[in-house]
Image (cartoon, rainbow, N blue to C red):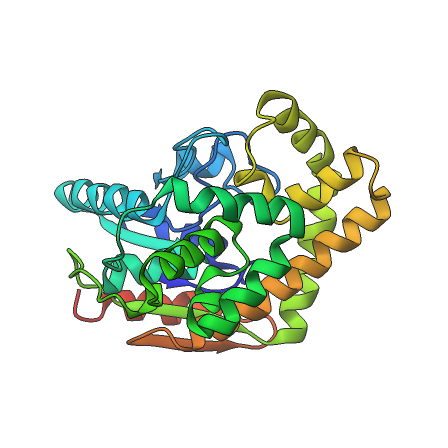
Amino acid sequence: MLAGPTASGKSALALRLAERQPLEIISADAMMVYRGMDIGTAKPSPEERRRVPHHLIDVVAPDEPFDVATFVTLAEAAITEVLARGALPLVVGGTGFYIRALSEGLPTVPPADPAVQHPLWERLAREGLAELERELAARSPRDALRAQRNPRRVVRALEVWHRTGRSPADFPPSPPRFTYRKWVLLPEPAALARAIERRTEAMFRAGLVAEVARLLARYPGATTALQAIGYKEVRAHLEGRASLAEARQAVLSATLRYAKRQRTWFRKEPRAHLREVGGDEGGALLEELSAWLRKDA
């Protein structure tokens, strides 16, 4: 597994690794599963995906349901196929909850109950995400951290609380199917902030506003997917609630906050090799990670 905050260079490093040894990439990104959400998720280009096989990208439409259990099922199936071909499956991504569930096991929480969730979704629309986050944090800081400001996860955690009186994090995990070795990139905060600024500008130049407009026209009911960073803020601009400059700044600020939460999460990743990164270490990182992958292979 190769994990780390957004804009930490995971994808580029994985592609360079693929030039040295036969590997296929299993994406662990909660938003790359949605078709049409390309620019705002920094999805690998068609050329990159032709060069190196990628899995769990463009799996569902933005208005279709997708959850961590589905991710684990599809990821384990993809890993099995890659191993059968004699290649190395490399899980790459920044969605900490997905990586944790795949490597440590899925929580054994009860199945979702739409009847209990319905009033929570109504509260979300009426009061906003921050209010539900405050309730979740008061009940369980662990679950609030795991939710990573994802509306679906916040609603799901509160649903479990309301039904059982227990934290979702308290339910024991099921055993994972495979054993994983984990390498976590932790760029120095100032360098990471600069990378996020460059990525944000590049997304707007590449047509993020037009992408969001197309998605809204085609999937007006895709509330969960279009709450993703970049899409929610640009939607506010398209609906006249923010200027373009305000939307751009909101995307940057939200991404910086998300990266900070990711750093906190991944610092606590069980049995992971944490690699602090400062400055331009592209070549050194590649050599170090290549050697780490070869070890005990």
